[in-house]
Length: 239
Image (tube, rainbow, N blue to C red; front, top):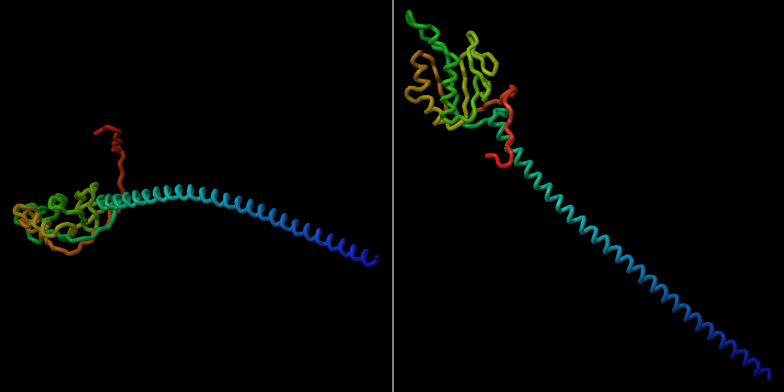
């Protein structure tokens, strides 16, 4: 009888253990299932977050590309303007320049005038320098300097007593003129029949012309002032 009771107790314990084990396994499965669902939800949220960030970055990338294109276009425009400005500065004489050309040296005549002749005819005057400059310009000179003074649109050449004023700077013979251009053309223009060299040589004024492979001409050191002239602003449709 006692044996049967013990067997029943053991059986009951086994049943309880089995039940508890089954419950534990079921609980673990439920927990794992819940964790899997939570993990899946987190991954889905993370993926959506990454997709949103990617879309934002794509929009930002498009915007940055547009800005880069604008910058490149702006830099190209600035580079073009800088090149044009430098060319204008060169034409205006505001930058030093070098190139092939000629060097012309003019000096007063050493000849003694005959009685009755005007002694001033044997000296270099402002109009002699002007004629020389005009002949060089007519022969294609691109830049000219006179005794170190850059010749520009506002340069004055006039006699001031026994001296010649160039850019409000007094100078005296010998007059050294540098000109950049085609050397042969410049030389031919000065030496043409009836030209400035022939005219001055008649009075014994020496004009020496030297063809140069490279001539250096300094920049204009003065300033430009327009007090009365104003730029003309054209409107759309104006010719």
